[in-house]
Length: 175
Image: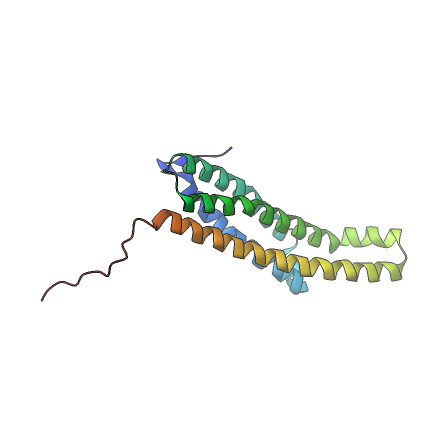
């Protein structure tokens, strides 16, 4: 599906940085668009496009991580990391869909289409109810995606470093 090594290094350790950066950036853009109408107007389609890039980067990173998992010794911490990593695709998909729907609902074409098919009063009430529900859901899912990427990173760091760093205090040289 994607690269497994890059210049002799496992691709996962490089690709993971895309996800670690893009998930919080995407979440910030989504929350900004939801809570700040001026940001929504300025960012426009950029928010769903950023969410799409994030969505595409997650399976590439997961695939390279699965390859790395099969080329390292069996470790329960790695399995925990892999399990958490598999869940990131759902979070990224939800953020992408919500950002796309939020953008579409607030686009002029969507508003004109809704107006042409319903009475004015119904459109305003329905639009406000849909917008409020989408706003709450988008903020919760964006926040959840950031928490999930943190959990994945923390479990990955534990898996990679738990047996490589000593717990003894560093010795001080004699004077």
